[in-house]
Length: 125
Figure 1: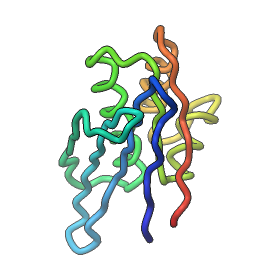
Figure 2 (figure 1 turned 180 degrees about the vertical axis):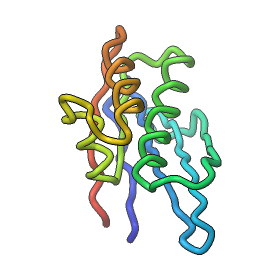
Figure 3 (figure 1 turned 135 degrees about the vertical axis):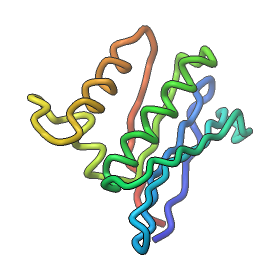
C-alpha cells in the first residue's frame, strides 16, 4: 500500500507520521517528517520501539511529530496519519479504557496547548 502526503495550507506545517512492523522479528519503528507549506523539509525523525503493536507505533509516531513541531515553535500544524485505528483511538476514545490509553491521554493533552492542530487521515494512493 502506498500512502502520500499533502501540502499544508499557507503558514501551516505538515507532520506526516507512520508506524512500521517487521513481521519476522516483531520489531516496530515509527518515523515521520515535518514540512512547510511549500514542501520544504523542516525535520525528520525515527524511533525504534522494540516489540509492540503496530497501532502503538503509529501513536508514538504522531506524538513524537507533534512534540517536535511544538518544540520548534510551530503553532499551526496539520498531522497526517494513515492509520484509521490510531486516529480513532487518539480522537474518539472517550473513557480511554484501551491498552493505548496512556498515549491517547498524552495526545489529547498536547492538543489542548495554545496552538492549532488539524489531524487528518491519508488514504492510500
